[in-house]
Length: 88
Image 1: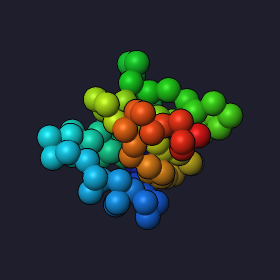
Image 2: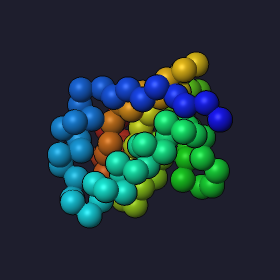
Image 3: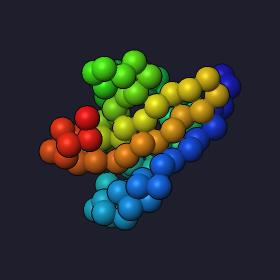
Image 4: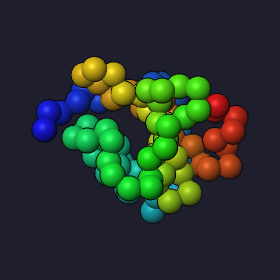
């Protein structure tokens, strides 16, 4: 399978700094996994309504918001689930 180029918006760095340490490791692994497969199977991935190429990936109580392009996966934000409504 091909590897996608991984990009991140500026705000993602700040989002990651706010994460609890125990969550940071699993979130970082999930983000790296999106480079290999941006559409992992299971119930952890959902599309964002109104945006067909934007997805949210559940990692515990946090959500990774990302877009998939032809060759790239762009991480838009990492949010707590309660803050997801403000992003959309």
